[in-house]
Image 1 (cartoon, rainbow over the protein chains, first blue to last red):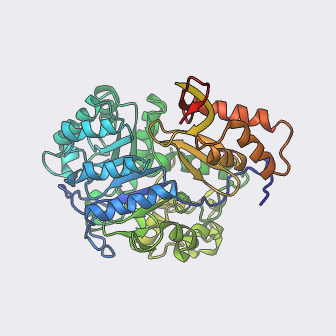
Image 2 (cartoon, chains in turn blue, orange):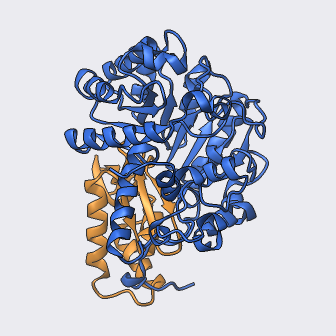
Image 3 (cartoon, rainbow over the protein chains, first blue to last red):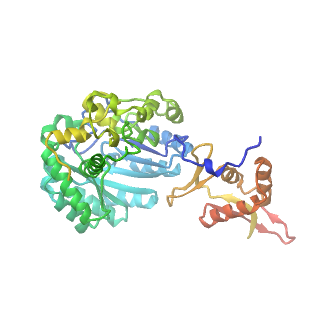
Length: 376
Length: 103
C-alpha cells in the first residue's frame, strides 16, 4: 500500500488526539486530613472504594501501550498508599512521567529519595493556605501547616520540582500578601498557583464558612493582581480570583470599547479538558474530570480506554459543549458580556445548577457586578 | 566494536501517533519531545537495528509515491537530529578479522 507525503499546509492540530496525553488518577479514597472545602469527599455520586495494587499496575500497562505521556496522582492523599513505590515503578516501566497533588504532610525522606531516583517526576504540588499555621490549619486541621512545610523542604532537599497551590477562603483572604512573601521569598519557590474554595464536595456543606463573599472576592482579586505585578510571572491561576480578575478586566474593557467578540466568546468554550485528558476515580470508574465525578464513562480493566476516549457518547457530548451559544440560556438573557464570555467550568455549572451544559453562575461577571462587585 | 550503518531507536522513547497526520516522539526521562510527520513515523518504525540506512531510504521511496529526489538528504537530516537528541543510535557489532561483522 502506497502512502503519500503529507502536504505541510495540512499539518494542523487535529480536534482530537488518538489517545489522551495525560490521565489523572485518584489512586486512593483515604486522606489523613479533612479539609473544610475538599472537593473530593462528600460527593453522593462517588463510591469511596479503592482498587488494589494489581488493578492499577494492569491499567498502567494499558496506558503505556496507548502512549500516554503522563499521569497525575491524586486522591484522597496519594502519599497515604503503602504500595506507592510499586505503583511508581509500574508507571516508570510503562515509559510515563508522573506528578502528585498532595497535602504534603506524609512526605518523608524515604519516599522523596525514591521519587527523585525515578527521574520521571514532573512536580509534586503541595497545598499551602497560609503564611503561618493559623490560617492554614483553620480549614485543614491542627498541625497540618508545619507538616506541609516540612514536606516541601524535604522535596526541595531532594531537588524535586515543588509546586504550591493556595486555595483562597474566608480565613486566608487577608493573608495573601504574607503568603506570597512566605512562598516566594522565604521558601524560595519559583512560583505558586492560586484558586479558591469552590462549591463542590465538602465545601457545599461548609459554604457559608469558607467560600468568599462578593467583598472578599474583590479583596482577593485586587490583592492578587497587585501581587502578580510585584512578582511578575510567579503567581498563576487557571481559576479563582486571580484568573477572574484578569479575565473580567479584559471582558469589561472589551465591552466598554465595543470590541469584536473574543474568539472563544459567546459559547460554552470554558473547558478544554475532555479533549486532552481523562480521570480515573479510586474505584476504577473513568470520568471526564474530578469536577464531574458523577459522570461515569466506563471502568478500567473492563472497558478499553481508547474506546472510551473515542466513542463515549457522554464524553463526545461534553466535547461538543463549545457549540452551545450562551444566548440560548435564560440565565444569560440580555447580558452585554456574552461576546466575551466562555461560560466557564462545566463542573461548577453542574454542582450549582444541576446541568453540565449550562454556564457556571459562580463565574458570571454580570452576577458579580449586580451583587456589588467591581472590576479592579 | 564498530558502528554499523543500522540505526536503532532508543527503546525508552515513546512514539505517540496523535492523528493520521502527525506524531510525537517523547523521551520520558527528559520530557523532551519531537513532532514528526507520517514519513518520520515510517522511518522510526523501520529503525530496528536490522535494516541498513540506505535500505530504509529505498523503502520510503517505494512506499511514498511522491517522495522527492531530496528524500535521502531529508531522512539523513531527520535521523541525524534524532541521534543528536539520543533518540536513535547505531547498532554496535564486533568486527571480525576477515572484515565481516559479527552480530
